[in-house]
Length: 347
Image (cartoon, rainbow, N blue to C red; front, side):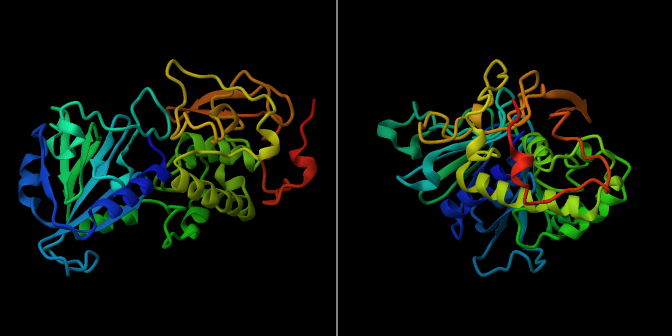
């Protein structure tokens, strides 16, 4: 399932490719046909990402304020889930002509060129949509096809507001209120590893960021939230903000410090591997050097040499180092600026 940085990249792609334009909507698959027909020809007023949710604001006129609560404004709400993806094609430079999503066989974000075998001389206007396309959006300079989403529906202003009110703070949003996270975590008996995957507690954090943020904080994933100090929870938030911002900017999740990347540079791949945007580029940090514990179970910790462990938590696998991540109570020392000894590698 895509993590939050991916959805913010999607929002940026839509903003660059369609914002302010009258767009055509269709549903080749037919499951969104009534809604697409009603919104066809409207103006894309705004694009919004919150956690793992994408909201496309559409209205009949370009001068409408999408956040003013006008009944004329509708929001196409999309949650990609495990199988969903958006594929873009268009003129040169349009949305970088890539695909963003999370096929089940991959983790994180993958980008690749659109299969334009049905197009003459690469003309995107002649690309025939696949039968699985739930929603096609076409603008003046390109198109976007949505396949396999968990949710594709139309919201009104009240439903949009209810969604934002339900979700926890998103580290990539300027209006995020981390106090909601601090309060929820410190009142909960649930382990911090499960809390970080709860989108009502914090929006946009997925399995990779969960595992890596807890390692970087030296926190045991099973310690109850109420046993953590405010400083510990603040530290997790303050670490996630730049980590997700880097992911939104580059399309890659990289949590390792440069001096640790060549230590035990291995990862336990699944059949198709943990894929990230730009894996074919020799200039990027390779995935086997990108993580401290994610998919490194049974391998030595990069810092202390202890074997990394894994366990199921709330239906997802959490990875941790039992030696490095030993902080269990608010009485244990923690500093956002880890000292040199804490980051030293022990043979």
